[in-house]
Image (tube, rainbow, N blue to C red):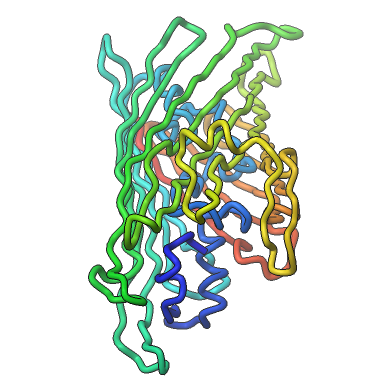
Length: 383
């Protein structure tokens, strides 16, 4: 679940249709972040993949970044885009639980001649209606919880092959009503600011057997920023700073370019760690202090997770026919010692004139997994 202050963790909250234990599980998976990593970060909703296209490709998009959702995957990708676009994604989150949770992401980019593309986004996660109960399990009332982020991004060309990008977002987390007294402390909304730093390199188009191809490589360090707090100064939790690197290879399958295939691969890692005093490690400190073996308590004892098992891997493929119809598939893997998520993704897309729609589907390899049967739907307009 979200890494909240201990006072809020012990508060007797439960979802309208779930037990406290299920609610805890619900929150820890709501962004797809692993169990080990969630223990050291707040607001993991910032890591929910926001578009159906790359979600259908095994969550591998750092080297693609060729539409408005480059704001999330790699803001440097904005530098290679012209024109204007609006992209909206909606998903009923964790449908197997039957709760009133949903995720919305609105992104847009605007091209300015001589300056480049400027992007903006709004991210919203509705956590549903909850009950507040006292020490004797008496009902004290109900309230709604949600989390929200909004920001701007910019990418610029260093040359025709290399681009750099950055972004900044304001983060707001409303988990319990402000002013609620919990274990002698007053709860409040959590706020923070996150910054992204990114780069994208693409080769010049080249020919293989008379067919055009291109290779891209990307890097994105997202959500660098101050820790977030819900009560006093001593209770702080780190932002989910994520390092993502990857590549993508696009090639024509015929000499006319009607049929194209793109293969992509991302490797990512949560950089946040807990300090010895139990508070979240700062983003800058985590850049140098999170490369060793991670020791965590899995409920049965201390488990040591080496660096290689802290990495998350996504690979995907996308086929386009004449830039009108697309089929997608992907695979995502995370070590069992670090969350154990493993699933297959499927997706499709349509384009007609300035309009486009995409959808993606998650097929989990574990029965009754909370992410099973998750559908995302995206709609976009290019001007």
